[in-house]
Image (tube, rainbow, N blue to C red):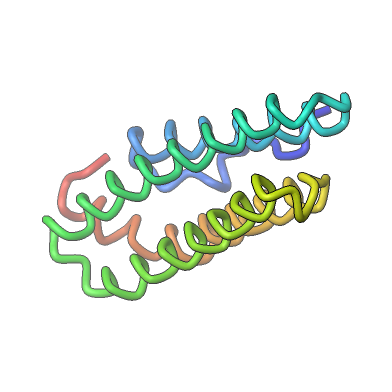
Length: 135
């Protein structure tokens, strides 16, 4: 069973963003599965890098939509993105330096953060962008 299951409650009614959220969920699930299966450091490092890269792409796309449409809480939302990227990059550096292991707690943290971020933060911009015709 996957760590994080997509459900319609996570939908922001913007196909591009929902599809990106689904892909991030799949990467988190892949990281969780690799950890449970005892995959080596190289495999975990590769999945973690994929997660970081794709999350940055997603954040850029999401921020572009908010910015060009004048979303009033854009700066606050962007700061939340920057905070997560910083946390994950710090974790990645510690992992690369051999100071910590990738653990199931990381996957749990990412799942909890993404779930909370979608439900509490992304859901705020959805009606605004939907009202601008973005679906």
